Image (cartoon, rainbow, N blue to C red):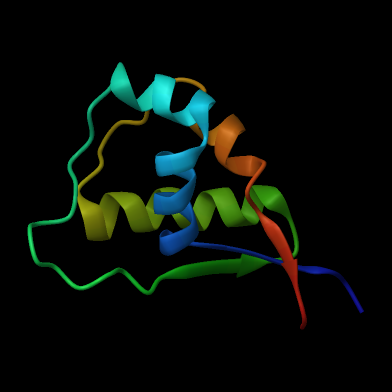
Length: 87
């Protein structure tokens, strides 16, 4: 059975808060954040390849969070946070 991979919006938020490389990237390219008091986003990208996960995350970020451009290097850093899950 192929390995399943996952990256959730919650994990992305935690990565932005704790990963120095992502913090450096994001400080140079402010992005829209969640409105004050908004419920945490429950989206999770799941797939068999990191590329599939990144595509889902980009689509979700655009459609649900209003991100229409992405800082250089952000996706490479986020790739490090994709994790294996049970199928």
